[in-house]
Image 1 (cartoon, rainbow, N blue to C red):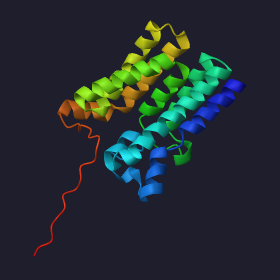
Image 2: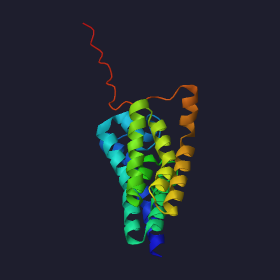
Image 3: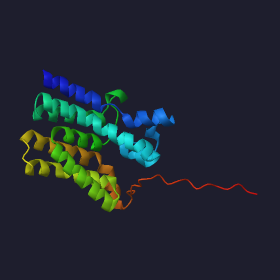
Image 4: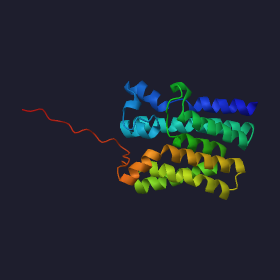
Length: 206
């Protein structure tokens, strides 16, 4: 019973569309009409820069981390996996958006692994940063890091629920990045800029 409650709580936490809410609160705009139209932290950062991008990353990560950590501490790895997976599902199909399309689960998945298997989460985050630094493609970094999670879980000796969860997370991230894969193949994927480019100022005519 407790595991079911924790999973439901994970889904509700994951359903909180922080990217959408932050942009509404501080800019009065709808992130779904900007950039890629995604509510996730990457699109928020790409459109509005780090002032909104950093909080979006932290909050999207926290909504996976907290449920997974609490469930793991209270019950065990199996419950932590279920709560983390539920948070990812909530981020993808948020309750608060009427189950319409949400984000691509990357930050929430990272947070879930930091909660249920910290060494796996930290290793995946390190690989993400490395690939991103080399390529400047957030999508490539996300897919590479997600695809490595099961390997790290196995090498680090985590139990089978964590390894299975890693495979599930990788499959979900890859599935939701299909448009990015298509753009990469066509050479149309945009490299990520950590700072927004300032719009050129137009001087008034004399």
